Each structure stands twice: as C-alpha cells, then as structure tokens.
Image 1 (cartoon, rainbow, N blue to C red):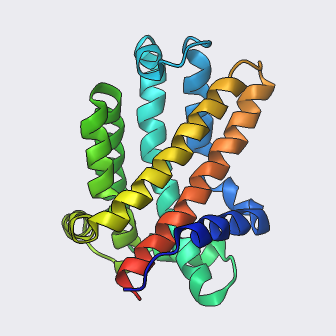
Image 2: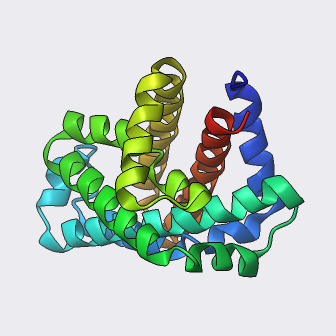
Length: 223
C-alpha cells in the first residue's frame, strides 16, 4: 500500500470537480432534500440537532436524503473508479456497473445511510463512530462486487487495520462537512435563492467527498 498524499488528493478532487461539473447532477435529489430540511428548521440557530427535531418533516427529509445520498455516492464511486482507468466520464458505463449489483448497493445504502443518519441525529458520537467504521462499505460493494455482509466486514477491517490514515481521512472529511454545514446555514438566510445555492453547493460537496473516498479506498486496496 502506498502512502496516501492527503494534500495532493484534496487538490486532485477539486480539479476533478472543476473539470467535470456535470457530475454534480448525480446527487441533486438528496441535495434538494437536505436543502429543504435546512429551510424548514428554525433559521438563525447553529444547534442543528435541536432544530431538526423540532420538525418531523425535516427529520424524514434528512433520513430519506441520507439514503439517497448513499445511492448517489455509489454511482459516483463507479464513475470515479472508471475515470481512474480510462480518464473519461461515462455515465452509461457507470450505470452498467451499478445495475449489475443494484440489490447489494441498495441494501448497503439503506443500512449505512439509515444507521449513520439515525445515530447522528440522536447520538452524535455513536453516529460518528459508525460512520468511521462503515465508510468503505459502499466502495467495497461497487468496486469489489461484495455482498452487504462482506462489504461491511471489509469496511470494518480496513478501518481497523489502517486506523491512523483512516482517522486522518475521517477528520478531513468532517472538517469539510463542518464548513459545508456553516455555509448551508448561512445560505439559509437567503429566501428561495439560498435554497437553490444550497442544492448546488451540497451536490458539489457530495461529489467532492466521493472523489476523495474512492481514491482513498483504492490507495488502501490496490497499491
């Protein structure tokens, strides 16, 4: 396994997003749900857990959005994995990869998306711990073709065996998510236009983190 150059990969993921902005079309629906959930909560407060729980609809939107975000993540993983080999963006070929294992992708997305979203809403630290252990489940499903049980066990194994690099990667992702949350919160003060900007921003953030995750997974398993 080669050492993962975090600074280089952070820049590479940004260049990928700038060069292929059409990739943000994939996570637009979960980005829309997240943006609506943010809009429906009490704006003007940074206590996002408390404000989300004030609205049952917002919570439902967040849970459904989380599952759809993982489905979008699966498609993006296939897209970026193919890009690593052929240096081209091919939506149809990426769909063929997902279609060949759609049941496993759906089950893993439902399990991982619901568990992380649920525990993050009610119990922050268990949610973060689960996210750390399960972050490779989708890459293992899409790239290796593993079934849900094998994908989850592979994710656990990779996280434990490479705990130093994985923890660093996880902290970097949390940093981007925190900055992303602050931006989404600020844009929430702008009526209508803020929702549109949030959708675009969140879709870009999901795509960016997908590129980072895919390349990090490949660095752990391929090199």
